[in-house]
Length: 476
Ligand code: P53
Image 1 (tube, rainbow, N blue to C red):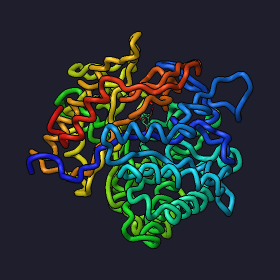
Image 2: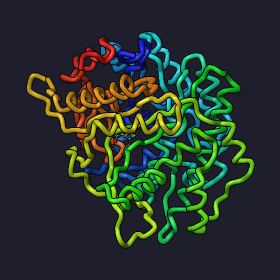
Image 3: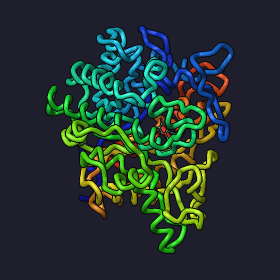
Image 4: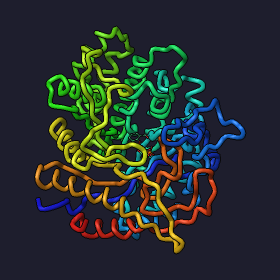
């Protein structure tokens, strides 16, 4: 092959809670994203007990895509998007999460949104659960600690597949399901699984239990999708930050391998329909007694995914230390800085080669089609007096990554379906809740405090990406 496939899915990616706003419109209920305040680099977002007066909740209004999506999709079409990845806010379809019947106004919103995409030949690529589970499920059920949530999710998935099967072919179940490997911090457990830990709780087994229920729910959803319409393609979604050994010392190498095991076993379950033995042995060594039934294991087997969607922003590095003889990976303490790569203003390690490595890693392990559903550079943009934004740094980041992605396809023979850079239009950062951490080709006039006209304008990278797409990745 000389380049990307002729039907390569170039596009962009967002998530409902980060751009829609309209948090109470059309009968929508509050989600976990609606109780998170704005933070900053080094300042965690506060998770409040419900929506409290006087706090800044940036996702409530976000960039008002809920009302402006027609104009925004028109701009995506102008860039030449073949696909657009977004999510369905669970709380628009099931405001509380445990209802038996869906909310028609929410269903209608996504009908209209998908129709608008299809009008321009843009294929919607849809995540079912992207950090936005109903807050009611957190309060009443403890989030994904609770097995009952499986049924609620599968009902939501079934309604979505039935309703949109002729508009949406590509689906993903849980966004970055493996982020919760970072369970010592409060962010990932809450956004992935609606889990708020109590003081003194042993966090790790609770994380594994929640992830297990999600994996079962994902597998059941895959099965339901196939029953409804065998042409639907359902993938998983993994946050890929490959973990390198800091040196070639054998223990560092082994530490890196263990770290990869602990961050990426989720993919094994999604793809192979069973737990890897290393993890079962780890559960035993640690004495974790999890609720994993024979029925669950059968469900996992019947719901293997069709493709692997993944995000790639950065690589990590780790090393062995004397106080960790079993070389166990702990995401809050085991990571070290990689002296060979630069970092973004938010401390994310910039490593284009790591994308080629990741593509090969996934392909070698699983031989399933791959889809890069997020990649991008969060940066502070300066809008000049004439309205222009000269984001050459973003062009540099993306072109370096696309060049490596091309090597993986052309030289290494990886089967890659598409590429959707993150935050193709500026939106609310998931990690920090900031507006100033921008990823877009399209600038949105809004600041961290919520001020601004919400006016959209094309950055320098807009025309650049338009050309990348029209040349099918030849012009970088
Ligand atoms: P923000 C951590 C590590 C890698 C990806 O992130 C991550 C996170 C969580 O912050 O999240 C994904 O907005 C996620 C998107 C998110 C995007 O990366 O923190 O799927 O929702 O916006 C970028 O800069």
